[in-house]
Length: 519
View 1 (cartoon, helix red, strand yellow):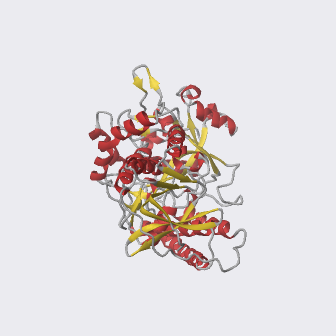
View 2 (spheres, rainbow, N blue to C red):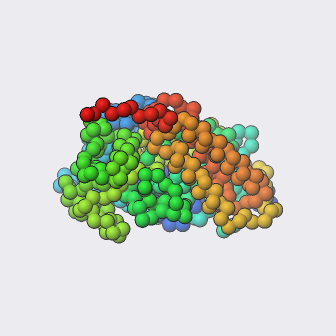
View 3 (cartoon, one colour):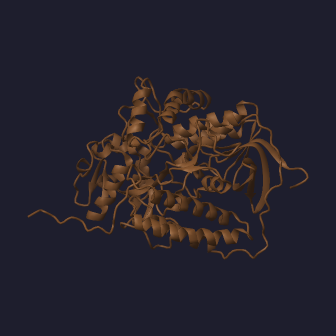
């Protein structure tokens, strides 16, 4: 430990809406806040990429709760859902409208509320189909200008500083230098797990850092098997999946060009297979507006059976209603009048670090908010446009609760750097191995035997990475460590859950399909 340790009242790790909300709430309590983020620009945060919008309760919180519970297939925690719906309106009014003055779309009578899959009424505030950046940019600018908050960008948390069940801070890396930061409380807001899969709607560097660090420190982690795949990611076969050298992948899918918001289906967009047939009414009574897990499996099945699935936007005035998406199509050479090619892509982790209604984990002075946390709101499947809301509500509650604790510096862990640098492609090659295993065995559908094979591979991978971490320190190596821990937790929880529910769908690949009875 240095003679003059660096201290802060609250250390927030991550700069999405949940991290920014936590920083704002703690600063409002008079605490000095340090916000560390790997991102170097707004696009580095998952919140920036959110398209559909942010749902609120309006005048019908019970109906909102019913929709959340139904989308989760009855697995969401009712108490957690109550926290969300009861605080939704006030949180959005306070932060997004009064503090940030977000210019949500309007109609002749006020805010233009829209509807997405599995919502029973129009309750989603939005800005075209790019709501995330219209919230995130002003929020980040506001926090950057706040006297009580200091932002460290291009800074990664490698490991938590802990002793006897209490977290005292984190080891932060920036430009190759590793420094212990001691805090009265630490709030993890590190986002999702997109880098664990070859096709994802997440930005780069979503490597499960918060979950990996918390799990290694001994925090409880829950519901990791519930990985949500967005059914309508525009996917171009001309582009190789993320992190690959052009090979691999399933169902002929290439890389994700951009996410096609569920709001497009909410406004009348139709899914058609390679034969031009609309197929969703055959899978669910709500057709295109069925829960995401149902639509994702249907899209996967139709792609495999007919070669492709497109989103037909001819029933709506696409260019006028979704100008940003129309521009994205043009950028990628897609004639949207002929349909937008779509495929499922990893989108959101419903589980994570287990927290209570204030974001408190099972370790003292450690909080988790946003996608890296498991609040219980989503259960086995997340309702559309609730992720920004959950991040905002729990971020505010966690930041307020985290304030007021004094930092207590202790002996920091020694991160060694005594062996030669890793080979240039070491982390990339290991990541390719990890994503291939996750894609093939822990995807939209899971076979129990495949899950066992995945765990065996991931255990070996984690062991290899742990061996290198003992004598080498680099951001890429620790990101790989966090990713391998998180991937192993997903596979393990999936193998332990024998019930198909929500995003966790078990199949038995060894069973022969039934013979057709058709003439």
